[in-house]
Length: 261
Length: 323
Image (cartoon, rainbow over the protein chains, first blue to last red):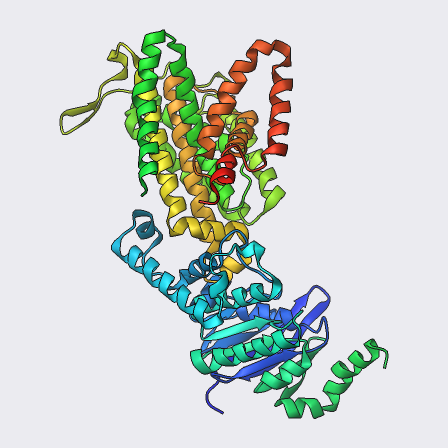
């Protein structure tokens, strides 16, 4: 395995008496698609929030390309190249699809805010570059038909694609996708699986995702980390995870009980 | 910029700087100068409030900064003999600085919590003015001289107001120029990337942070600009009335600034200007209704919010589609 791009080292998060994550450790290789799975409330989202800087770990640290990013505010983590998309379809509602993506290019602006205020040459060059890059992303994700639609008018599937577009606009190295397949039917899921693959293959991204849709996870992931009650209980390839008795007990077992088997 | 827009701006400037003075000259209604000067200045302060709305914060504390700006100007003029023209930017900058210190902690709050804290700010400013020795307590600061001459390299740019035969017109022009400049700055902010970022903040702060926006910095920056406008307006008000008291700006004024924004429209830069004009004149016109003035005024406000929740200027959007 090559040198990891992202390392999660002994991350623990306590909220009062509740331990959301306990000593979670794993590495992510460059250009890997790694899924974090686990039953509801296992602490997956909390883990993601800590990687993206929205929550500071109680102990432990997150290392990105050799630098510690845990404890930094989200905008700094994003600036370094680790960007999160959201579980809920989080977008800027009162902007068009294209405006959403253009705004999300903020990280790449070279002109200062004052420069933008006075409309300097650099600011204009930035704006032109953002617009071109936004169109590029629109083409990549196949959003041409809805580019000038207000985001608040979009159906679910498009919203999620837009969320991904916003993430891509920041030109990250590592993208964290929070439940990208939730609420999708089989066809939509397969299309999304393809898209996530293309993120890695065509854009060279490292993808971390949290997901419930087991078939999709098994299909897409290079490796899987399984969390239960805040602790990592297994890590490995999809085949290894499927055969792991602890995973079956913790995750699949409870699922069976839930559906009355 | 499109032609109709340039025409609109030209018409507006013509009305403000030529038609109004001509009209007042012809009709002899000199009291209109005072009213319109007030409208211009209040709309400057309201512009600041509007900017805080633009980042998704309900600001009911602009009166605090108007009061602070007024006192800064008054104290510098009366106790240190500083020229009014110097105190004007100083008052604005002082308010901006204060707002950074106050804003850093309170801008973490959202929604009604932020609104509550800002509501208290005006009262805090009034009590501070009552308590501090430098502000002369409840007696306030009076007999403040009119703005003196402003000259650059021996060239008189603005004559001494005391020597003018018509200081009312001079004040009106000064307020109008300030108003035009303020809205120019505001328009530019909103239509540059800064405005896009503010909108992103208003719509979704978490997402904004995750695309790399320094949300804390942007919030404080907007609030500082907002307070700068408040301070400027306050300083000029003091120059006009030549006096300031702790009760010169009270909670009622802070609430009014917010209402101006609501009535005019939060979606348009020129909303607060229109809102100020409508409400200020509306209130005056309603004085013929005597004891029913407040009833009709507030009833109309409630009706307006029900019928036009996005302000009067949203009528334009509805007709012409989205800009």
